[in-house]
Length: 440
Image (tube, rainbow, N blue to C red; front, side, top):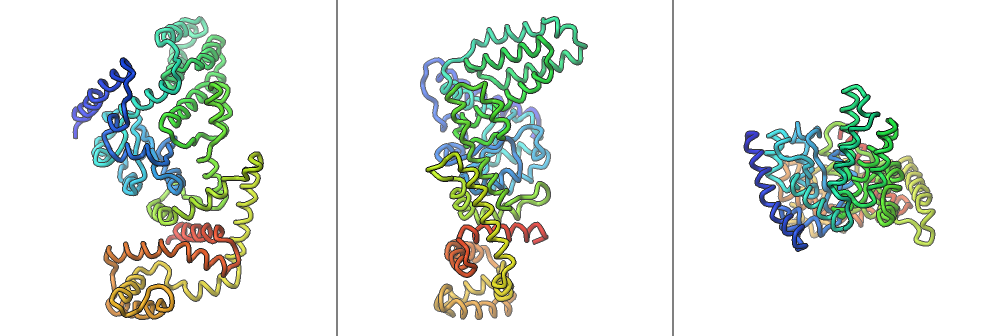
């Protein structure tokens, strides 16, 4: 795949979308997601709960997976994964992660593009069209592009700019270009921020200009979340900085940043993913425990409906309670006895396969209940005698049985340890993650 072919891909995308934009802009006729996006999986995402990450980050994807059916993961041309696209594959194979390209195909390495074209993704031109359309429909009143260009042109003619050394002048104008670009399409109330930029340039307030640069980038992210109907994931400190430059309706929506609250809860509960190394085993653990994590954390962050202002304080108190219970479980005599009794079975696919084979062929009456001990005993003999490897069919069946039994196991362990089910669910996730961090 050569650069010329990548340019053709970009040109084809533009030719497909330009008539749709003209139809929408000129006649006001609606354009649906199924017309804009090539992949049905992307269209389906708009009917699901979804989040949009600031950028592709393996730990961030992993902590978002339990709570969203779809994760839109932006990939810019400088992202590490573009140089090693294989690092993306495990996430894409979950079916929950959809890459969003922030640059045209031609800006990426050909190996990355080859891999991405084989899977559902949002191209740069699809992203740009959909984002602009959604923002314009929500804003309705925009600044005149011609007037904005005149303002930018005047900036370069200020004496404070002309007197700068050439390199400094170029850097300053590049920052201004970036700010204006991040605000596009420019809502009417963006004039407040633009006026602040003009003043910072005119009076050489360098630190203020750099601060406004961060604010404009934050507004870009916020409006992108808004356009894609995704959960808000902007850092708390940035939320306070961008709020004065939004209209009242936009500022009100900033009060709810559920994604960040969930991440705070996960971190507080000790469900932390390493920043480096092989993340695939952690991906499997979180996918397996997805429902349990979602249930516990969503219950934690829901707060007290009668006292919303105290919700964060209550969240930290509840996290502390769970952590204290987990510490008590880990250091209890009951835990040591249970580990000694059943620890050898944990994760042994051969034994699991043997149990299922015994049950399937009528050697044991049931996998669950009174027949379980007989099935386990016979199954273990089968696995030992034939050194049973686990075919994919049995692995799928074992996974299905384990998943169906998970709520029952959690309730039994909760009674055994005399703690609540939420504590057991988090304890089991942490135990698996800690075991993996120590080398499996």
